[in-house]
Image 1 (tube, rainbow over the protein chains, first blue to last red):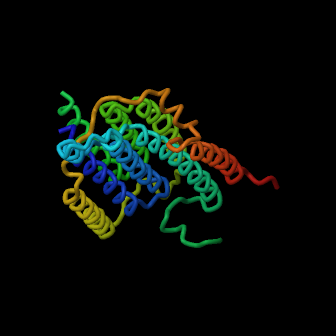
Image 2 (image 1 turned 180 degrees about the vertical axis):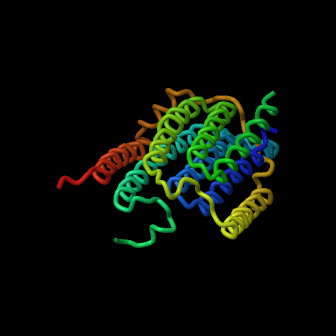
Image 3 (image 1 turned 90 degrees about the horizontal axis):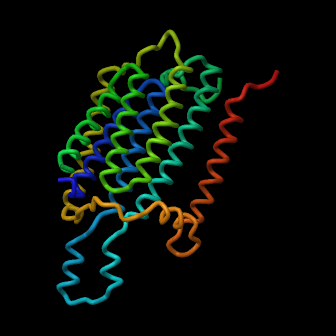
Length: 125
Length: 168
């Protein structure tokens, strides 16, 4: 069960959908950022998993068809390197985005004394 | 053994995520999010991405969760201590996310991803990841690496500039 790709993908999709529910429901801006972190984490899991998948059907078919092209068969067995590197980039971007979001939030809170998103509905005060 | 571990991780992770988005107390929400992130690190260990598991705990749990806790405590007011949404909004949001999940899951099941498998052993070493980051060739990631360094520097400066007190 841990080997099937589709289960990993559906699990990370479910995490993303739960984060989406939180994103649409939250009234406080910090709660919104928490939901965004959940969604980013789900996408990162998907990066890592898709970086490590094997498409056995293709490799088996090309071997059966007598292909001795080593490069082509090697290209079907994906090393996990690219997925991990993309996940590292995604993590750095998540950290950067949370930092900017919180800086803006702190400044907004200093001006308006509230982070209630129903009340922050003007572009300038 | 990996199967039971995988099932346990998945069930616990989904449960903690649902708790995180539905609880009205923001501090509890952050702690549940930390639980989800730690379980994700466990999943990365299961799939053989060891550097990523360590980085997940270091960056996400040790950095972002701490920052969120500080933000929750800094932006507390007396009028809104709990974060409840009206029921109509909750039902609509649940419908939207359920529809998104069903469409996505349906597309995935109907796709050729159905018969793919995931390898659970490690095949990249940390040295290999580091060398690929500094590789200026065709399959290297030198340019995104430099760009993300610039991005992090600019985010640092921007955060300080945005949130500092203006001197009167």
